[in-house]
Every structure is written in C-alpha cells, then in structure tokens.
Length: 182
Image 1 (cartoon, helix red, strand yellow):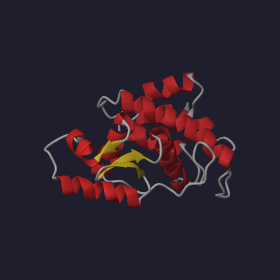
Image 2: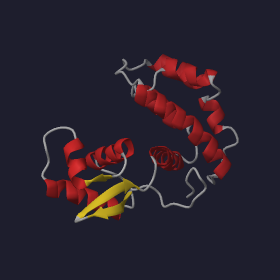
Image 3: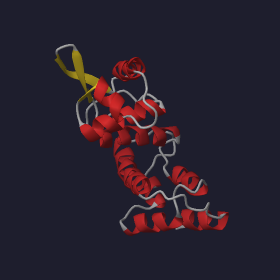
Image 4: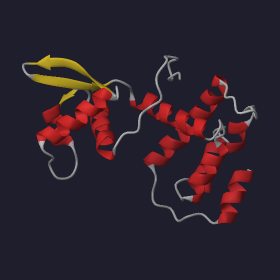
C-alpha cells in the first residue's frame, strides 16, 4: 500500500479511542513526553502507567516513535502525519468496498453524517459521488490512480464533515436517493 507520498506502508491498524486522542495530541502539540501526553488527555486524569501502556501500544503499531531521550524521559512523536493517516484509513475503507466510494457516501448520508447540502457543495468543487466510481474496474482489481482520485475526494468530504459535523437530522430516503442520483 502506498501513502500520499508514494512510500510503501502497511495498512493502518485499528486504534482505540484513547490511542486516537494521543495521536491528536502529538499532531497538535508535536513531540511530547508521556507526562505531557497524560496532562493533555481530556477527561479524568489517567494514571501515568496507563498512558505509558497506550504509548507503548502505539509504538508497537508503528504509529509513533521515540524522537529523543532527555535524562530518563523519552520524547514521542507521530510517525505519520494526520493527513497521511486519514488518507490511509480512507484508502482502506474504499478497498473494503471494492474500490467504489459511492456506497460509502450513501451510507454516510443515511446515517446523517453527510448531508445532501454538503454533497452539493462538494459537487460544486468537482467532487461528485458518480465521478468517484468513473473508471473503477468491475473485475474487483483496484488501480492506484482510481484510489488516489477517490481518496482526494473522500478526504475533502471527511475534513469538511469533521469541521462542521453538527448533528443534522437524518435525511429522508428521498433526499438520499436524490443526492446519490446527482
């Protein structure tokens, strides 16, 4: 599997919610010690050893690495950037759907996570669900160019959703069908 820079990488491993929070801290703050990560985690304060275990698991998953050592404290940094991680996750999701992104978009709309208005906005920018499947092979093989095009479009939609994902009312089936047909 290739990441956004064309470097070969293994498929991303599933991260727990706490591991994702730690990754967010490292992406936002940069290299940090376990103590700094512990203090930055939201919610009730977790024991140092619990945070340390999460950090070691992330290291085993190759999501983070030791940047340097200051006295006895290791400083940790993300091994992969936020955008590259998102692209790998979206790429894996598209692969699970046989290289087709339109079913993913329809499911997001049915769940109320992507509104028809957001779809129309993406369409104005040249990202349509129909375009995502143009040229996709029907025999199940996936071409890298097709994946890259689909990933760019899905990443745009993902970022847009993340920034303004107000809990919209679940769109009706007519709206979903209309948006999927556009």
